Length: 488
Image (cartoon, rainbow, N blue to C red; front, top):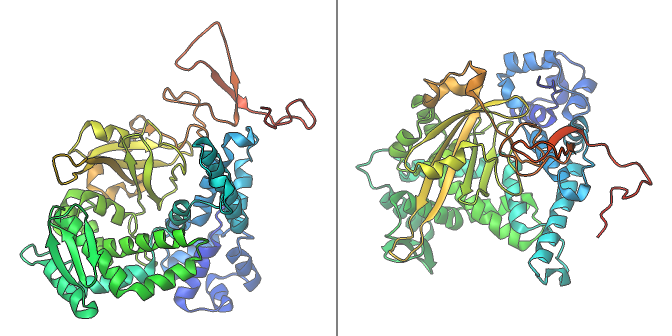
């Protein structure tokens, strides 16, 4: 049975009120609640009531499912994974406490995650005999992790950058679906007219290189890749001030993180230019999110299409909430984003029961899977293998698998779900996030036991696993031998 959860949506309430240009008093009156009650809800001191939910849907056309997923859900998922680290020796926190911390004290939750990330970074450096501990920044969070978290917690959607890219695409004809038109020529002319940077195609190993006022694009790269790299340079050369302002607001703690985030924002611009929000969202609904049809229509790769679908989170015009991940052949998640309740492991590999791992076995096919997570949520999952050739005989080919999915309640908007038996519980495969925090007791692919479960060892019998999961692990008594501390 799925545990009922109180809904805390303070940030979303403030977003709706500011979008409508209302004061707290006017908004409270429109929702039929007192000013003090609204203030408590906006500060996550009280959950959103059924009366308020109804008023939001009727008066402000707020999609109620959009309230259920937000920063608190992501923080809670990240906290649960961090607490599963062996350093805590199984002394995890109850799920209700984790949810409460994520909803009511997000700053404290983020500080805890930063501290845990610093601990992991130190351990990894020691394990690799790195000399970083001799530097002052040894315990600082890794720049790449800080940037990933920035995009993760802003829904992988940066409104000002996205809208600027959309304007560029319309002005330059960059995203014109007419295959008879050379969109690269139009975009190159736009870039040269505004920045003086001329674009040339060149036989070279790099995808993109800027030399003074000349931008060279690889003639070996696929057309979609060349288009993406051109739009990336447009972001840097023509919208540098906008990107700088966004980076200032993000407040990264190191110059490395800031510059990595600059790449991420330019990539966001490029994806939004290649697939402009309004036009792409309309086409996605029209084709019922047929990935191959959308890729053909917009001259984009399947990875670009899948990633863009997961970013359609513009306030007032949100698309189907998708999750999107990219996984390498070792099972490590190299890209991740979720606009759904499903969150992914920050460290390590994804659940082996997930169809994304089988995609490597069937290149060229889109695999479908109905999956259910331990919290009872059900998803339609799609996965396919992606190969990125190196452009030469001795150049290595990079291989990934990408996965895209949404909750089963949106299945009617997906062409891939038409012949699936959504009503049968037997159709759904059980998947999880990480073995260390997965609650399933009978998983035949479990690699390590969950830290919150006690183990039963029976030498007289052997099943798939060499142990059985008993009840929750009891924390050690204060003063007892071991005391929950490590002894080397």
